[in-house]
Length: 180
Image 1 (cartoon, rainbow, N blue to C red):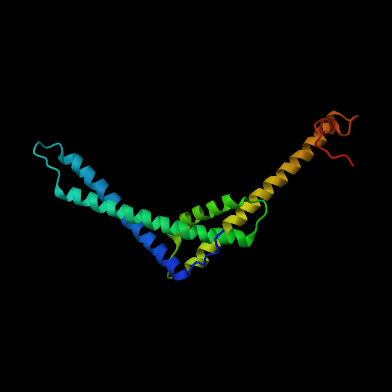
Image 2: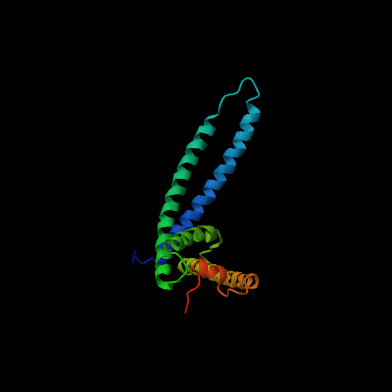
């Protein structure tokens, strides 16, 4: 487990860099799609040559894509550190620690587009997102366990109705009930 401290200013810079790279990537994707559509139309003419602009845009898109992937990796590391520290702090029982850390990172990437640095702090926003998701995971696990208990009780009742002479019925046979 990591005990690294996550600096809010650095965290915000990483998020802003990621958001900018993502916007640039989307812009180039639309631009490339538009050029491909135009290119297909122009290819129908007999004197078509692939313009130099097309190769320049492909090269620029490659650079933008690499910058996007680098910022995504840096941000994933920061989210991992934050999520790991929150899991260690919160200690939700019923939740697998490794799954919780992984889901914490994924939930941060889902919610990152909603973050505005002028409205709040990155550390606070992402911590709140992760904690709320962990609470939901805990509630889901707890409700599932309660449902299993209620189902087991329902099975006991159904068994007693079908076999009134044997109070323990099928549960005694399968060693499900502890005899007291």
